[in-house]
Length: 381
Ligand code: GLA
Image (cartoon, rainbow, N blue to C red; front, side):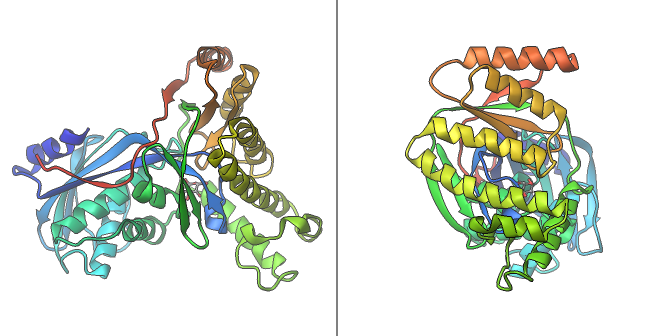
């Protein structure tokens, strides 16, 4: 895909791009729906990347083309609410202008080539916005740090597109390192890079979902409603993830359903993720894997973000002896992450394929996850 963005740029706009960059999708090991609750997450960057090649354009105008859509989109990025994938790039441009990292009233031509699947729980939008932020900032020679790129990308999606996501995906796309998981504490933004053992598989259910369309925003509103009530018990509480684990009985008393279930997931998942990071660092993969199964159960029962397809894959992995498995990303479709020890891969993939086929009449795509690096500048061809 690397060369494709430059080739697409030339074919569409008739000249060479001025700058290019790429950023990866992500697979979250554990820590689901904790980021916007001020808790920890533990993603790895996925080897699939999004490449963005850019050149200067007409003032105020973005012209965008992608390998996934033939038509060139032409928009005034300064105008009102924007729709479609171009809205993400427009949001990035607005944020860069605000930072002085893009020419005031400047414009750009943008070509995108990606092999990150869309709406599969692999953070394709963060791969796009982080890569676009890097490439577009290079147009004016700005040298933004990885964390600044993550901030630009986050505000583009959150403030301009209107998806009330957390910061996990953008930080992962910006800061991830090859062979490492990124332990990110989302309240303080402290990070630690943890070497990964075992072998990771990604099983794609093939079920796609539209994030902005609601479920994530709805869960987030429920979490905020839970915090508002819990504040009466603990006035200094700012984040749901900071509720003391020892006070679970009080939490259960105070919150009605479904807020109680949502909050129990967030508090439990926060503890699991911090413990999981320690286990991973010490290479206690077996116990780490058990936490993955626990996390899936919590997502399924308490956060209500799984689907029968994802549950089928997790159950099959468990039966065949995988160390752990869980839905990864927002849920409501998308993919399952499977953790394997040294052996048994053939048995696990066979059992997953068999039971998925028996239930749904088709086989899911299975990929090996090679934890890769974050955003980088790409050569212009
Ligand atoms: C989506 C959001 C992330 C995170 C996950 C759930 O991917 O973009 O910020 O909230 O869902 O963990």
